Image (cartoon, one colour):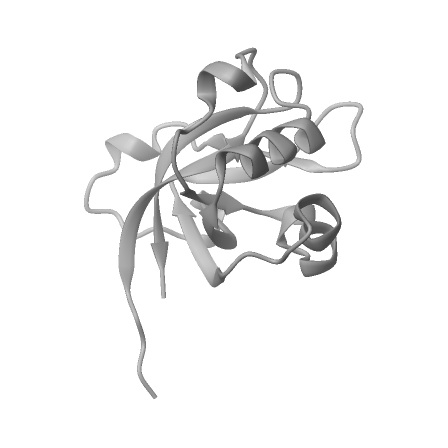
Length: 132
């Protein structure tokens, strides 16, 4: 059995802050780390009209999932002090497991932004994700 290991810089859906979907739109296909509802092939098919190629069990280090006040879904935030802990092995407390979506086109990213209420419930951010 072979294992692929990689660290990639990707776009991620993360905690609240305001920004414009147009300003954040890539001009070419990109990869996107998702967790929660967007890990569902049925949800992706409904939103995008297809299920993108995925890398399962993508790991976002130095972040954690937390409840979002007044919402039924979680948010992801950086783990306090985790970036200072260089050389410390990540634990499940400061990692978030999700899926890496590959080949997301700019218009598809706008659909994901709209679904996730970009600028209200999350801000798109570049992060490094480990995958195996």
